[in-house]
Amino acid sequence: MKGPRGTQDLLPGVTEKWQYVEEKLKGLSKNYNYQEIRTPIFEHTELFQRGVGDTTDIVQKEMYTFTDKGDRSITLRPEGTASVVRSFVQHKLFGSPNQPVKLFYIGPMFRYERPQQGRMRQFVQYGVEALGSEDPAIDAEVIALAMSAYRELGLKSLKLVLNSLGDNESRNNHRKALIDHFSPVKDELCSDCQTRLEKNPLRILDCKKDRDHEAMATAPSILEFLNDYSRDYFDQVKAYLDAMEIPYVIDKNLVRGLDYYNHTAFEIMSDAAGFGAITTLSGGGRYNGLVQELGGPETPGIGFALSIERLLMALDAENIELPIDQSLDCYVIAFGDETKVKAASILQKLREAGVQADKDYQDKKMKAQFRAADRLKARFVLVLGEEELENNIIAVKNMETGDQENIGLNELISYIKGII
Picture 1 (cartoon, helix red, strand yellow):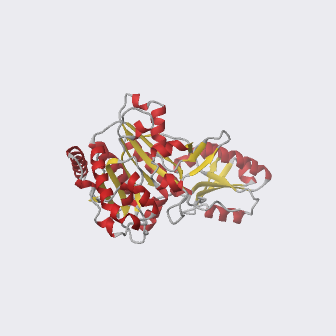
Picture 2 (cartoon, rainbow, N blue to C red):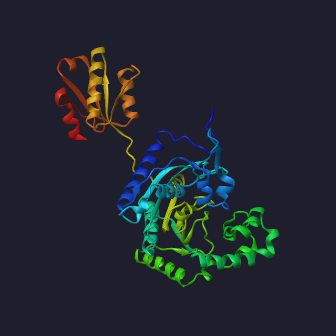
Picture 3 (spheres, rainbow, N blue to C red):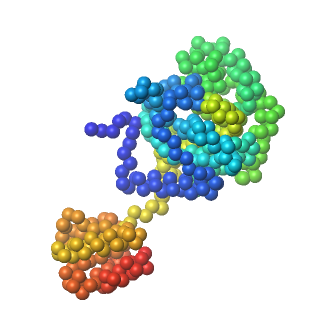
């Protein structure tokens, strides 16, 4: 038996990297005053149809959808924002005295797409959502948090790409211009883009099949259709980023892959050599109409999500070694029936005192147990034989220096805690 295609097992030696990254991201979230939210792995399919958008590749092609025993259509979540907003509405967080509501999540997402390096059918996202503020400053804060997530882990080859999708008026004017632009070459576009032309022509700019079509290069830019409010809003976001000394590049064709975005849209990319053809690490933007679409009051929002798989790929591309300590504090060696029972007691007391400790469970010889301690990178080996037990002592060997001394069993815990 093998795991399903597009999934992976994270084994010891690798999971420690994930734990380190996840703890860093949680700590960073706390610094920015974002609180954790955990939502179900599956939701009613309608949530993603309404929240993500019927014209997106996610809804049309990539969702894992099934009918449960109650004949309800259920979908494994393909992204985190719709679930967070659904929870925000359901639990009336818009009534919280602390506004905006600032949330983060870490968890598995599911998309049926062609598996490739850094893109799995089950993948893990870290994301943040700030709901309840239309201040350009919080757009900049969310972008700053996203950039910090990578910088805190040591990444340097980063590029922030920025665009504005404008408000509804700006988008409607741009929509008409896109339809006029692409209609003469409609038959040259892929079947998906032919459908998008009427439903959501902005999605054409994000098409992977038609990206090299000559009409793409001359497509009208949303920036040409921004009204005064949208243009001023975008200028303020850029001013905040400038003040924070966060460099960015404007990309007029950046539209993001979900229908709910408006105003600020951004992606962070890796410029590291050898990272791969798909350089995007994360992305996000503002979604002022999503809360209302899902049944809540008019509430602005902005967020982003990053793939932890792709984050780890970027670390590898820049040859960054995470400072992970995989050593063991103590390894207990005992020989003799009575000593083994006492060793189990000592081991338990060490663990209860917060000491990382282990022992042999395969009845190995003394030399083999010392080799096992070496493999586990034990800092100290505690040796208990019949003579030591009789004298109520235990031999403590420092594996780095080779020094060894006898310590009374009654003082062992305080002694070990004192030196580690």
